[in-house]
Each structure stands twice: as C-alpha cells, then as structure tokens.
Length: 121
Ligand code: HEC
Image 1: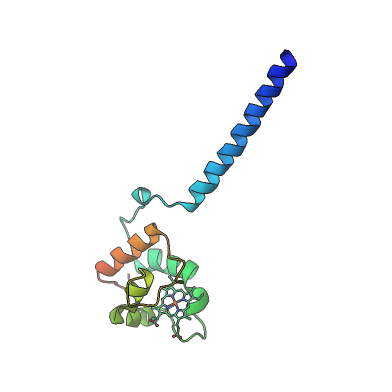
Image 2: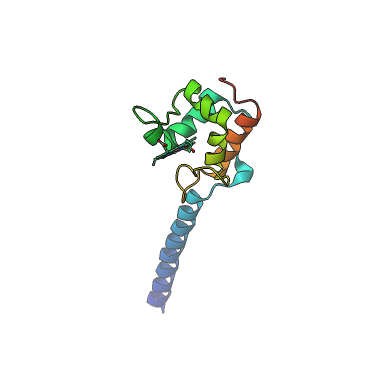
C-alpha cells in the first residue's frame, strides 16, 4: 500500500512539473497588453530598441530602405508607409513580413510616439 501511494505521489509531482512548463512556455509568447507600460515613449529609449530588434536586419547598412537613423526613418513616417507597414494597414507592404507583426505592446508604444509628433527625443 505504501509503495502504491509513493508511486501515485511521484506521478502527481512529475505531472505538475510538466504542466507548469507548458504554462510557462505559453506565457512567453503572449504579450499581455494590459501590462504594457507606454507611459514614457521616446525615439532613443523606445523606438530605436524595437526597430533594432525587428527591422534593422533588413533596413540598415547597404539596403535600399534605411530606417536606422532618425532622418531616414522620418522620410517614411512623413510618407505614411512606416505606420502603414508596421500596423499592416491595407495598401501598405506589411512589415516585418505578411505573416509576422511586432507584438501589441511594441505597436502601442510606437503608435503613441507617432501620435505625439514622432520627435527626435
Ligand atoms: C526580412 C527583411 C525585412 C524586415 C525584417 C523588415 N523589412 Fe521592411 N522591407 C523589406 C523589403 C524587402 C522592403 C522593400 C524594399 C525595397 O523596395 O527596396 C521593405 C520596405 C519597407 C518600407 C518601405 C515601404 C514600402 O512600401 O516600400 C518600410 C516603411 C518598411 N519596410 C518598414 C519596416 C519596419 C518598420 C520593419 C520592422 C518592424 C521592417 N520593415 C522589417 C524587408 C524587411
């Protein structure tokens, strides 16, 4: 009887560990928009970090569309294509790709910076 209880107990512990791992993995991939802190958004501290992670691989250096300086980025902002591409709006090339959009929190921050005037701050 004791052995049976011990086996059952071990199974339970093992199972708990596995299901906890699944939950952790799922949480890594979901961005909870209600926890998104967009109280202070600036070009230097917010926008550059996101673009570095999501866009510079194709839009810096010798590529035809450059987004890695404020001046270069600003021309696409003024043309409307930066916002349109980033938000996957109809009529624009979806970026970073048609099947991948930057996460909701990053989108919220960049859109707020754009709406605030897209300053070089
Ligand atoms: C895997 C490569 C890749 C990544 C990553 C990528 N882009 Fe692009 N992007 C392209 C290509 C290719 C073009 C078309 C370039 C051309 O015409 O020379 C383009 C064009 C653009 C344009 C010009 C608009 C237009 O309609 O031509 C904008 C704005 C843009 N991308 C924004 C972004 C932003 C913002 C990100 C990051 C969130 C991003 N891209 C990430 C490949 C990429």
